[in-house]
Length: 142
Image 1 (tube, rainbow, N blue to C red):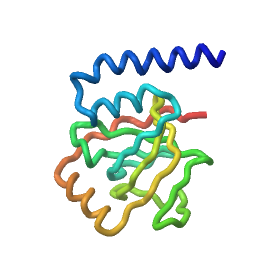
Image 2 (cartoon, one colour):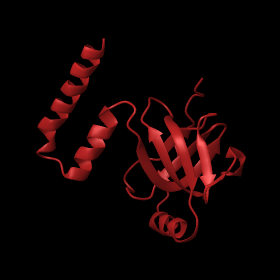
Image 3 (cartoon, rainbow, N blue to C red):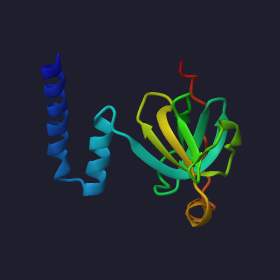
């Protein structure tokens, strides 16, 4: 079983390697991260909607990226300045850094860091005047 997983992982990395010659290092890194389960990605942005245990976040670093939904569960850490924050304290317009594992539907969220000060101001300025349409909420994850 372990051998099969190793072969599959090497095959996926090899397939990505063929396309890396055309992609820049940033794009190649995104491709590799997305292809390997358990590798987390990050999104810096602003919350556009809170719906149940899900938040929608607009990406401040890639304005062409659609708004994405992130599922928050009991294992998700939510922090502001190193202190725990409750989901009920998150609202539209809050600047955040989300760590997640790509998934079908809402992304599997491991940590949400509420940004403040200069970091929050910079993200808000990047998104100012750029209003993405938030997609309908994803189905509730079990």
